[in-house]
Structure formats: C-alpha cells, structure tokens
Amino acid sequence: MILTLQPVGHVASSVLERLRVQLERFGDVRIADPKPVPKQAFRPLSKQYRAAAFEEVCHAAESDRVVAITDVELCDPDLGMKRVFGHAEMTGGWAVVSLSMFGGDGEERLVERAAKTAVHEIGHTLGLGHHDGNPECVMFFSENLADTDRKGRDFCPTCAQTANLTLSRLER
Ligand SMILES: [Zn+2]
Ligand SMILES: [Zn+2]
Image (cartoon, rainbow, N blue to C red; front, side):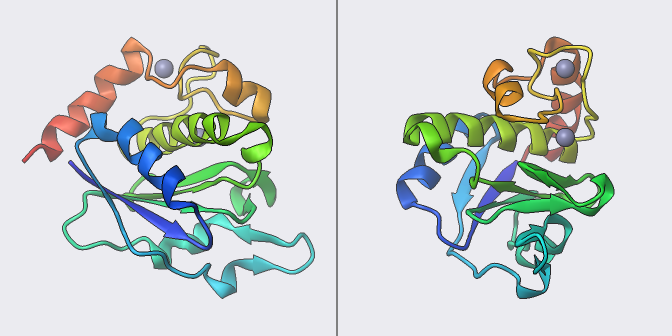
C-alpha cells in the first residue's frame, strides 16, 4: 500500500526519515510537506489538541493510509479527553501520532516509541482492535510509556493474520 507520513507542526526531518524506514514493511512510505497544527483542535484548558480534529490534515493524493506525525500533545474525546500517544479512525484510513511524550531519552528511543505507536495506529486502520491479552503485541493499548517500551514493534501472529488480509487487498 501507499502510506503517507504527514508532519504536522515541528517534526525533525531526521525523525521522519528514520520512521519512514521503520514503516517500509507496509509498502511505499512517502513523507508529505509539513502542515500547521489544526487550530480548532486546541483545547485551551488542558493545552492539548483533540486528536479527532487532525482528520482535516490527513488527506494525501493516491494514499491508502495517512499517518500524521505531530509534536503537540493529543487528547481523545472518546476517552474522556485523556492524553493519548496516538489515535486512529478505523474507517477513515488515517491516524495521528504524537511525539510529545517520547523524546526524554534521546532520538533513538523517540523513533522506537513513535514507530510502535504508528504500527499500532496503522493496525487499527487495517481493522485490528486492541489486543490487551498480549502485552508483547504492538496492538496492546499503551496507557503509559512503560507499556510502549515493553511491547514489541510487531503484530502477534493472530493480529498479523488480520492485518495481512487487509494489506493484501491494498496491494498494487
Ligand atoms: Zn489503540
Ligand atoms: Zn496481537
């Protein structure tokens, strides 16, 4: 499939390039020109951005999936506006990943956490739900950084089966 990484706000090009390489297993991964953070997503009280509002920056010609990569903090209305690392619209074919909490331990760790989160969110767009019975599976729901650091960057065999079914339909 064609996957577009859409930088939103300030994202280092070195991070984007390393992330692109990590996601190449999904197909042709392209990096779009940066877009500004959608203003109407801002929640003044929490100073976070509503993840669902990133839909408007997640359009790319010819792409099967678009993943926005942003430096701002995200919250999710479906989770009572709690802070989230990422968000995906299962039917919309797009997702957003926030780097805001990932950078405390250097770029290597930041890219690793971002890659796991991106694979997780892409998994949702491929039809996968959370796999909370398997803390090693990338589809385990990360409530905090420790969850993200512990889990692997791959789908478990069960999740991979479902993901590959969707991916095979997107092959061109
Ligand atoms: Zn999830
Ligand atoms: Zn799984």
